[in-house]
Image 1 (cartoon, rainbow, N blue to C red):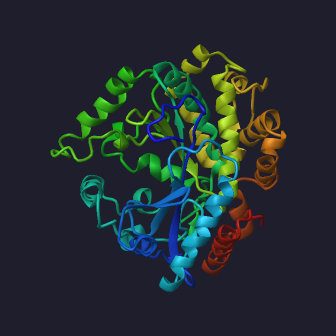
Image 2: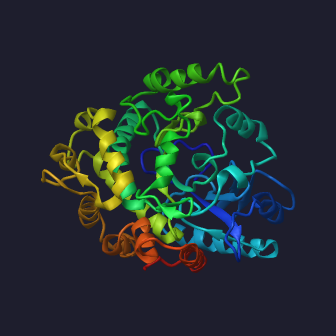
Length: 412
């Protein structure tokens, strides 16, 4: 895509995948992201261009992000491109004794002892976050996600896209959860990353809200209801205004009016990019169908309050694909005429309805791993067995590292 080109709905796609850097042998987090970027560029930079992708830093030194180099016109082949770049980074990590680990949380990291902030450019921003919120915790130092950026050209398109995104957000953990283990044990939740994410800025509740964005459908209302409230609430903690920008917004989907995109942030990263891109493909097809009012009108979509959507999200965080949705009106918004069903059944229905043509044949095949064996969280738990010991957890997460290196799905 051309730089600065105005894109309409679904004319471009920005994908970002975050990975942990860990020791090759013991799998402890390894804070060397700056060395990887230095080795790739010849100097320490926040971000470097590497062909179709960019590599960039994150808040902490043991996480690196790969993202499309601007909006991609198509998702075709992106999974393989991300996989190839993950292999390249693994090669750069070999001299440092490291490798990349997928999934959305390190299973036994102690973030209070092991977290090291990015100390280079943009350091003042990270220091401000740390001073205000205290970033030595799982919700800051131990979470990796996949982000999907989608464009809109004007207020009308924003209204359509924001309505559709809000509606689909609550069930995304039922497709993408990959964080069942924290502090060395399964916690009982399928998506621990989202649980710690939704609570990590509780000091200033308006920053994250209730994860599901408020029902606002134009830039002026978004500015007034969400952004200005957030800026006002943080002002006494941030007198220099370091954090008063759109990216402070930590809802599950955030509007970036500076570049006319909505960024979806509730997806756990998967075991290999091919699965991430298959999930993203399905999500986009669902959003396209909602935007076209295939099953329900725009007015119906816009009428859903946060209070009605939040319980569905919390159920998916807790139970993933096994979460029971007992709201026939919600299910009807996706063309499923039932009073209740499991979230995994809803996703299977959507995949069978919207995918299957020649263009999405590979994605449907990849998604069959999830439909047959469960989310990555469920597959990890199945492989671990009841009351797993530390060595068993190490073995399974070593296999996940191999899955990322080989570009293959994890099947227990």
